[in-house]
Image 1: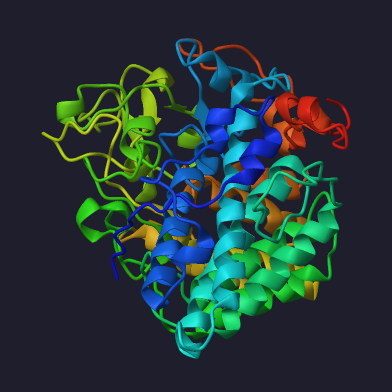
Image 2: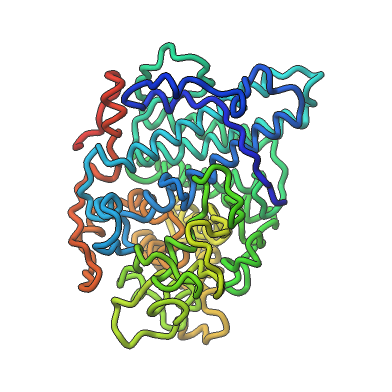
Length: 511
């Protein structure tokens, strides 16, 4: 089901909370772009339009947004071991790679403030739809819209707690400028709200397949990811492994999703809503964006340097040498994920590792979309569900179970393709310790989910981010310097602009 979004500019007061000053013009809404929530929510159609506006906000912050707030790109990959950020890349992104940023970096503020803008949008939808009387909306529409809004709010807070750790927890819409000096909640409190939002949503969502509209399976998969993150560092709530395995197993047993036979087809522009897509952030382009900040930049950020007419990109993200070398030479994922030289040349390079570049979302030759590429962002794929289940089931049982091996070997079999199963991407065999199996999971997620925005979260919960970043293999031609990561940098700082305006806020330790 394709969802076409019409922008509804609802209240965004948490953005005001974080601004260094309050401009009177910012508080004045013109009649052409503002509808009071009290006057707007007249029927189910109005409620759906408001929800569509919330989906539009998801475009802005979840993946590879052109509005420099896309979490998958800025947090998930910059400062992880998938991409090299060349010296000519904009300074802010280089400092993320080098772990040399300060709290004043605009990226920290943009991600923070725009998330709270969308959280308040979600709060408005939830509060206003809850208050609608029976003559305005039927019970079925109310339950579904509230479920989708809560699931989206839960996903936004999941981003924020992993990125900033201690946060203000705001779950009611803000309609005035009173009592804006919020205090921070501990991460356990934030996670409790996320779990409540997602479990409440699951009960009222339908179980259908790949779509931009959220389903029960999509939210269960996210809840599994939430539990898996809680089981690792920094919370170390190991009882959550069993809960994660339960959620992933429900998605697997639903028989709604399956692996695409051909790995390349997973990312094909003509096959976007395939059966492997569990949670999808849809984009249409060119020229079909909402306000210029929801552009999908997948084909530009993650395209190799070269002519846009040949399907190339900006050349500001190069593939890490270690990533390319980690692939079995017969792994079908290698040539889908890595380009060798400039687009559209995907032959093995004879010029050395300085030619390794991302290629997962290659643009068809002859398309020059520039900043506005039409690729959907797959927030959760079925392959990640299988890998999450393998890890969680093994950890919950204290041994590498048959179920865990079957799940990871499904992913590996697809990567092997038609090559010899005894020599190419061989099945993982019984007999591994838990520690050895986590090493295998680490490597498999590295290869399968490369450039999809999950790597930093994985490395953090395994306690491997700092050591990994401080022991990278340099690439001489494009290496901007050696990262110098410190333990406190598993979290971003609270943006300086937030601290300046709200004396109740405290900086994360170490910053």
